[in-house]
Image (cartoon, rainbow, N blue to C red; front, side, top):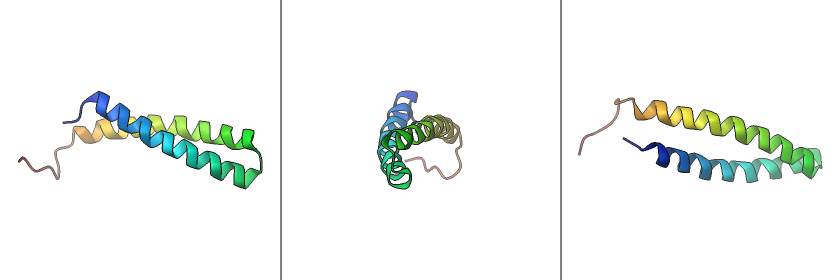
Length: 68
């Protein structure tokens, strides 16, 4: 089972990557760094929340696990 801290760190790293990517996409699509940044920030906040919940739910599901 994963600790809450590990799930949190994984989510933070993944969202930092996503934030940078989404900012770049937002700037390319809108031509505005501030609008691209706002879009990326909203996406990151929502994605972070969903990812943490998703990871915590999956830590409780035993299907597909092999005890070694």
